[in-house]
Length: 404
Ligand SMILES: Nc1nc2c(ncn2[C@@H]2O[C@H](COP(=O)(O)OP(=O)(O)OP(=O)(O)O)[C@@H](O)[C@H]2O)c(=O)[nH]1
Ligand SMILES: [Mg+2]
Image (cartoon, rainbow, N blue to C red):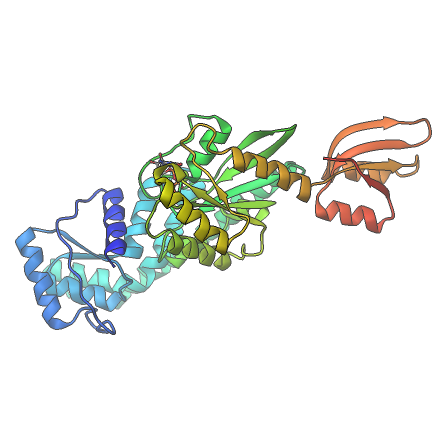
């Protein structure tokens, strides 16, 4: 619980507020009306006025009614974790796409809570000269929001189409996506591999919101397209997960996912589970994945040995790296080369003159490295993926392995 609250405090800090106090209660079941029991609610009210707090943040999701009732009891603005995360995303989103996605998530969060906001307005105005906005205003607002949601969804579909075109253009390259808990070091891995100081890295939660792709030379004549993605967190608002589906399409298209974990964090195993769950929610659980244990430099030799043993038992092919140490990503680089060799084998295809259509498809869907004629046939050295290899095999094309 303390660790959860520490994370909540970091979120509050990221959102730009200062934590002045915390309150916890062990309860079997939250009170349906006020979340906290009545004694605890009094304690909260007292604490808020003593500390001069202007905002109360709950780590758990509150129903619209619970939030309203606590606000009334404490006379203080109440937020739950989901709203806080949405707020952070709203202030940090930079690209037009991310902004649309966040706005969509916020509107969907707001819709069932409209009554609560209007009730506030009602009490604020003191009810003099007006009897509150009433149902009509509420209905108008609801319709406006629903309309806006529809418009945003349509725009996001357009954005996704544009992305799709871009993706098809680089179909033949080996694509790798970095996924993981927020602050695990995904951007640092990209920055170090791409040797690009412009990649944004920060010791804050949700430093990255927009996917960023760089072409990385991994040596031995291989290169990959490496994409950095938004980090995950426990209790990620599901509206947000849904609206980030498009951004994470990059991850869905990837040949390989690198699941980056900060193993220096005491709760790294839980972080790993959270990420696995979100990946499953996004339908990505069946993608080939490598667990990348990062920040190994922060561990003592004994801790290192402990983590390595623990991880090896869970995931035998995990990698141990440091984005900060000189040469700390060498094992990852080597693994990437091996994965390309395995998942994108290099083959030599022999084509007769009448097989022009096959030659065209090799150029379209594969990565042609060499092409020469031996007088009668055309010999093409090409890197193929599973789909193309399957198609060639089915068509009975003469194909042999060409080594690495
Ligand atoms: N000591 C150490 N620190 C690291 C390592 N990798 C990343 N960091 C630090 O961890 C913090 C977060 O790194 P980022 O690369 O921004 O993490 P991220 O996964 O991209 O985070 P989000 O974009 O917020 O999801 C930064 O302060 C980095 O300098 C590492 O291998 N060792
Ligand atoms: Mg990042």
